[in-house]
Length: 68
Image (cartoon, rainbow, N blue to C red; front, side):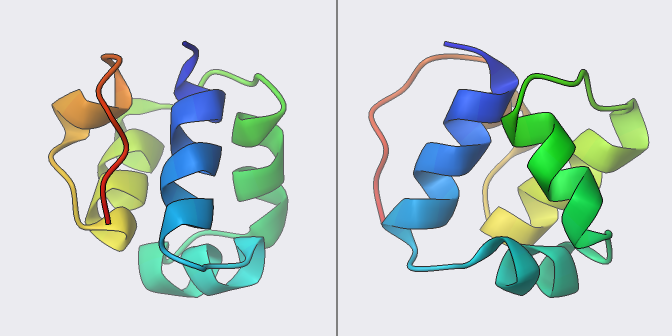
């Protein structure tokens, strides 16, 4: 799985919209959208996404079962 698919699955499992995750991650909604569509996130963006989703950054890089 790609980072974008993992982010999207985790986001949806938490009931977040892209805007919700953007606010929680201190990122733009367009950044969330770009990552979910396949753009490679910078290390800073990856850290912010992980923080917003409440997971370790490594969870965004490896396939794991999505949990709430």
